[in-house]
Image 1: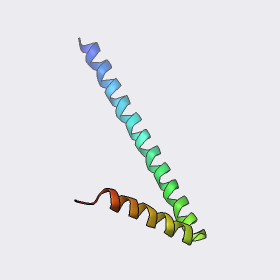
Image 2: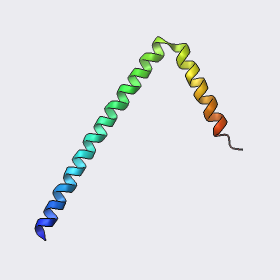
Image 3: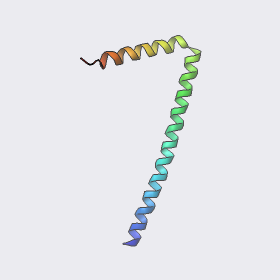
Image 4: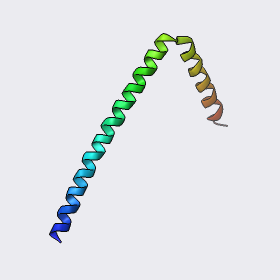
Length: 66
C-alpha cells in the first residue's frame, strides 16, 4: 500500500508541474496576443476603433438588462 501512495504522490506532483508549465505557456501566448493587438492598433487606429465600436455595440445590444 505504501508503494501505491508513493506512486500517487509522484503522479500528483508531476501533474502540478505540468499544470504550471501549461499555465506559463498560456500566459506567454496571451502576452504575445496582447502585444500583437497593440502593434496593430498603432499601425491602423481607425480599424481598431471600428472593431471596438462594433464589439461594444453588439455586447451592449445583447447584454441589455431588459
